[in-house]
Length: 477
Image 1 (cartoon, rainbow, N blue to C red):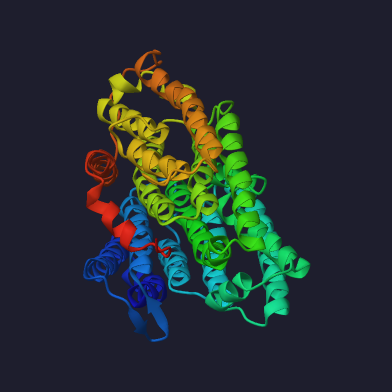
Image 2: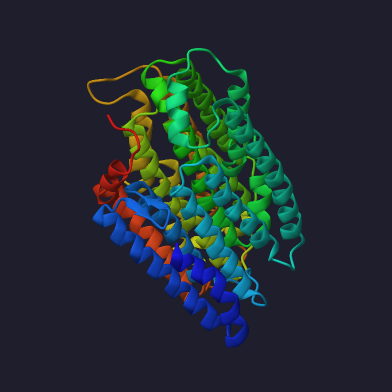
């Protein structure tokens, strides 16, 4: 976090005095990698402790690693992308580091107000990053929509926090969990506050019915920024759900109190609608960035299964799926960004004949999309298997309570294969108007290869990461 703060403060000055964009980019990349290496050391060591008022745990280290991987990939390709502005590169990197700092800060916070501060730091930085694509009117429109919807979600969140504080007189999540577990009567003020908070943070993860901003923002923003929002910012929102609602209600669910079971079914319904709407609407999309946006909405629905099931197995599976989603969805966005640099449009029809013009990009895109659909032996299949199995129950203790949710998730995965196959069909079967070979910047190729390696390795060898996910769970069996 200190390295990220230094980067956010220093990079505009480096750009101003250094004058060369490459110098600013190199410093940003070095700082991102250094922060990631520090985090890996903390994660491998299993460090837990309070440092400068920040509580570090295996969970915060694991989620921090996820955010820093996203940051490193975005920084790696940003200097070669024709969509990111070169006039304000220092400001762009400062916003990027500031947004990541907010994400990491959220994972170390267990108070509603400090979590809110971290979320807003990320959100405000994200609004500005979307608007930095200054020559594209779609970016300005997307930034305005994003800021308006984000303002509404902020207002709802603060209202919800104030209602919860009014009932129990605390914003500490652990203290609220104890109070909720001991409650014997339903507190309407608390219920209204929780609904407002779910709605407010539901905007951050683009859960249905709070999802309509995502396709416009992902389409209008520069592709590296779209990747950052889809793989990083969305995971921060899911981390908030885990740290606030799961901790708050798991005690109530365990002892059978009134709030716990109600909350589980609320999240189950939200998850079912989110994955279904995301996949069904994605079928009609002709713009690949909008299609990937609706796909991200559906993926958020899959991950919300952990909020319905609320078991250690579900949480570990959800954390693992967050990582696999970073590589498969991030890789898809990287290919889209690389092709835009080569002059290829954003429509699916623009990808016709891509297999002949860019065999590596077509093969990589096919693997990323099939992984998102859950085709074995790729990482998406493995993480979805763990996630959906957690809704059925653990071995020897199978419960039929949420089998229906697992069935809906499996059905949605089958639906998603249709619109992913449309892209593969365009690349491999349909003929394009040009046969000229496509050349992309080398850093894009490097970033795509990194994502591709992890999509394959985590599919056949999930133990590389899954053990850390199990160690990071809040829920103890």
